[in-house]
Amino acid sequence: MKSSLFTHRYDRNRDTLSPENQNTLAAATVAILGLGGLGGGVCEMLARIGVGHLVLVDKDRFEPSNLNRQLFCQEHLVGLPKALAAQARIQAINSQVRVSATVETLDESNLYERIQDADVVMDCLDTIALRFKLQDAARTAGIPIVSGAIAGVAGQVTTIFPQDRGYELIYGKNGRDQSDGVETQTGNISYCALMVAAMQSSECIKILLNRGNLLRNQLWIAQLWTNTFEIMDLI
Amino acid sequence: MITVELKFFVTLAPYMPENAHSYPVEENTRVDTLMKNLGIPNDLVKLIFVNGRKQEDGYQLKQGDRLGLFPPVGGG
Image (cartoon, rainbow over the protein chains, first blue to last red):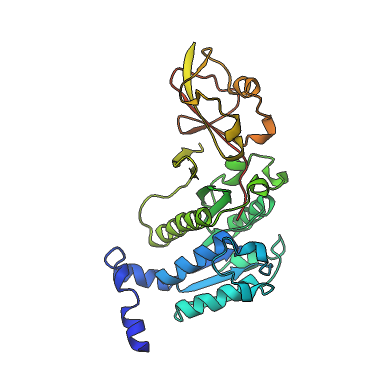
């Protein structure tokens, strides 16, 4: 049983992914910061496709209000740390994935240390100010960011390389001082969170495999009430 | 007069006029003037897109422009 898991696990990835692609993913490290609606979906998809090492960080514990959308939140897990629930879920899906999970608050003092070994950082954070701090750390470390953000049934995704202007183009030069976005008014809906997590996962895989087109200096925006999907040029 | 297409996202959607798909304005109307005329507070708008490209609020609208307004979105 165990050996057939290892032999056939990635059969249905082929031939979209070649054996060489699969080996590249197995050797890759991706940091996933924030394990809410976006981060949970990203963990699930990257573990299933076969990214070899996932670094997970979130300080929060599950609350009842997370049950509407956060993939790893179950009733009996309310009160437990999201990072440990994500670790358990990933290991149950794919025991070949190495998981480094940390329950801690992210800020300037530890962002660099947490992401420095990653090939890609997935920004699944929930405050605009912390996203700017992550961008500073990722620039220093020379690591690309795939950023997702959601509000209600709308979302956005962009990919930021170290030399790109990144969040300044989206949130403005004063974005560091931006209070939270409109998600504080709209909440977040399950299918929108997972749709944006899927777009982020796709960008991550394209970076790791050096394939396809990336959303650099572009913003993919979606609004599901109106079936609006557009890619906007930021420069 | 010219006509432009308006698409306002998320919390800005309630400010869309009924004839948003073909909205009449004076040629060269600035985006910030249009926003003011529609009662949209400046601080609610984070991104202005015209024909799929980011623009500033001083952009002057031309016939057939597609104007998108997007609020700050930061949830995870």
